[in-house]
Image (cartoon, rainbow, N blue to C red; front, side):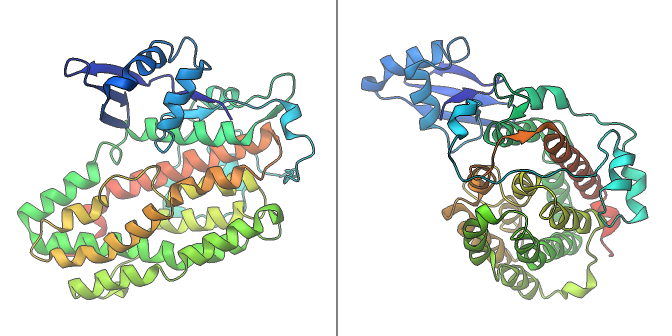
Length: 362
C-alpha cells in the first residue's frame, strides 16, 4: 500500500536540525533525528507533498503510520482481483438532507434530538469521496475512504467545542470551583461509557450476517471488548456513586442504535463507525483520567486507565482500517451513507457534551 500525506501536514526543523516539529490541526509532535537518518529524512520532507510516492517519503510516512497524518492511496481495480471480499448491497436511506436521512434510516430517533438536527450537510462530501476514487471506475477504495475520513473527522473536531478541549476545560472548572459537582460530571461521563461498553458487543454481533467476510475479526474484537463495562463500574464504586442516578444521553443512545443499524445495511459504515468508539491515536494517558488524578480521589481514575491501556496495547484504533481491508470496492451510495451517519452522530455528541453542566443533577 502507498500513503498520501494529509494536505495540512507540515514539518518544521528545530533545534539546529536535531529534530523536527510535525503539525496537523489535531496533533503536534517533536521528533528527534539521528545524524545517520538526517539525509534521507530531509529528502522525504522536501518531497512530502510535491512527490509523495518518492521512496524516502513513503518510508517517512510509514514510520509514522501509527498516527493519523496520512491516508492510503486508492488502489487500482486490478489489485482487488481474485480477493475474497465483501460486496456492498443497495440500501434505501435517502442521504440528500439530514432530515431525509433521519426519516429513512430506520434508526430510533428521540424527538429531543430534533433541536440539534442541522438543516443541511456541512461537511465537504465531494472532497472526502474524491480522495478514494478508483481510477477509471465509478467505485471507491474502502481503505482510502476510511483513512481519509478519520483525518477529516479529527480536523473537523479541532474546530468544535469538544475538539478544542471544551469538555476538559469544563471539568477543570468544576474541579476548581466545586469538587462534588466535578464528581457528578465524572459520574455522568462514566454512565455514557458504561452504556457504550455494555451495548457495543451486541452491535458488533449484528454484523455477522451482513459482513461474514470479517466474522473472525469481529469475533476477536468482541472477545477484546467483552466485560469492559466492569471498568466503568469500578469508577462508580471508587466515587461512591450509583450509576442509576445518571441518565444515558440521547446522543449516546443514538450512537449505539446507529451502529447496530449500520451493521445490517452497510459494512463500510459499520467499520468506519468503530472510529467513534475508539481513540484515533493514543496519547500517554486517558484524557478523563488525567483530570480525575487532580482531584481528591485520584484512585477513581483506575477504571479509565485500565480500559485505555487495553485499547492502547491491542491497537483498537486500527479496527476500522483492519475491517475495511475485507471490503470490495464501494459504490458511492455507501460512502454517502457513512458520511451522513458520521456527520450527524458527531454533531449530536458534540452538542450533548456542550450541555453537560445542564445534564448533571446537583
